[in-house]
Amino acid sequence: MKLLLIVGIGGFFGATLRYLVGGLIQNGEHSFPYGTLTINIVGSFLFGLVMYFSENLQYMTEETRIFLSIGFLGAFTTMATFSHESMELIEKGQILSLTIYILATVLLSLLAVYLSKSISTSIWN
Image (cartoon, rainbow, N blue to C red):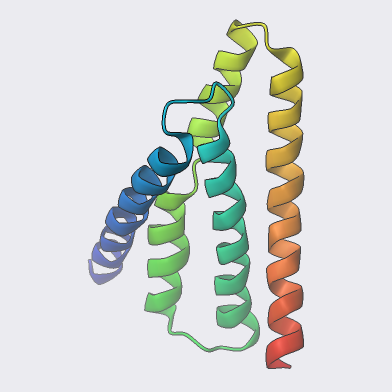
């Protein structure tokens, strides 16, 4: 029950921040989903840091790792929204935007995890 509460509290904060950051970046002015793209990249970077600190350095407790990775970042990152927005681009026939969006999301998110691990390794090793 304790871990469930930890995930729920983390999820509340992650979802709230996702709403604020996504709205701030997107601001209803763009048809391209910049807000979701940014959130996925930042979330992937932060996830890489959390996992490195918890798995390699053992700098955090299991509860902290669960709060940050499953709760906070699980709610902050937006792969469901990513899929929905990708479908909207398909339905609008915006295949070039769809291709850019998918490639940018996947490749830049992977790069963000790699960079966070590289930075962490160079600073704390």
